[in-house]
Length: 75
Image 1: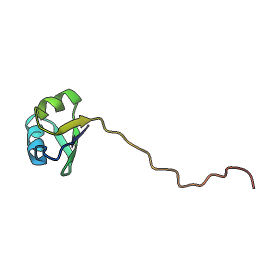
Image 2: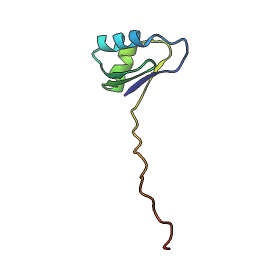
Image 3: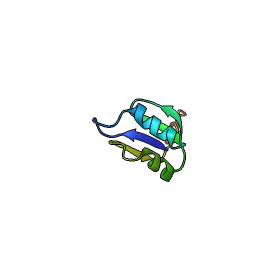
Image 4: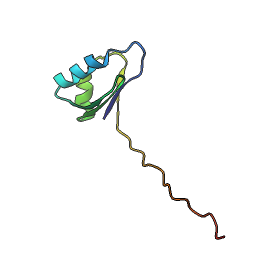
């Protein structure tokens, strides 16, 4: 799951990480306005509490584009 900040006046990332760790959620990667965390959505939201300006989203993966050119028709 991804926890990210959506507001300029949001609670600090360090405070959010502290809340998540206290709730038993492991933070895999942390940046200033986004964290990759491990756990189910309900427990993450419970640990987050009423942290102003932070939301939980599922992790999405986009595969890299194919670098091999494809012929549209035979030459």
